[in-house]
Image 1 (cartoon, rainbow, N blue to C red):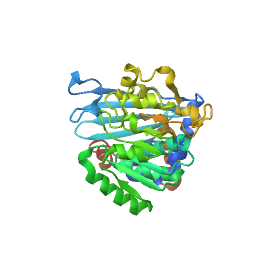
Image 2: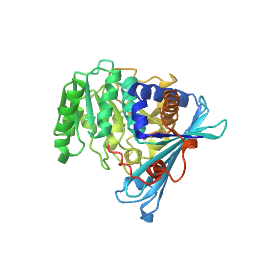
Image 3: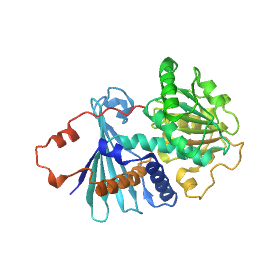
Image 4: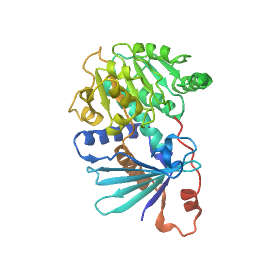
Length: 352
């Protein structure tokens, strides 16, 4: 019978170190052609003329589904998001040899953690070894994890932060104060994105911007950029010329090429398909090198591959079994308050 694993279980069992290790493992398999990761599918149930991206428009309703399979573990996941009044996630971890669902996860925390780990992977494989300043664009829950995970792979003299929106400068100041206290590192809120980009050796953006907030003229040689926020065809954090300035452009998978910012870069001739250096799996697996010169401007542009969750959730499941966490469905009788919580309660929407 399936094990029901809650948000509380995931927060207890999943460490940053586990997340980073699991994601690198998933990408190594991806680079070797041992996974399947179709582009996510989305469907509106309101505003039908608005396209098929319900997560991107506030107030719109819909459903999305992600699938992925990792041959190393003989496991797959099906991740279902429903967005009506709020967003809820249910993820099935499936043993592909028996066809059985091993666990059902009612949690969003692994999504936050995966994004934080993505930021660290970008830094680990593409930033200069002597990079000493980090710029964090976006100071929500993801922005907090961006810093925490980056500190697992590098030491920084200073961290600069900006909310991504000028009107939210108070949020950046709050972020700086909290992160300084938590990590014991100097965190400096800045009033302008330009100042952050010019001062930072590594820039990680995790905003909800639908029009560019970073300009090419601000980026100095040797900078590494990890772009997290533009994860759909309606989003853009960088102007087209930013991509034209990059010596290496690495994506996670095909959806990254369909974002608004990348489409504009192709349309305006800032880049062409031949300028895409490769995918993150090829770099993590050692098939292609990451940074090769200190002077290179590198970019890791991602939209969120589902296969990382296969390895992350497989680890959580094994831990849950060992530690006796989660609830086995064979121990439940219906109607049950637990099933009410799984299917009827509202989850808070992910906040970048």
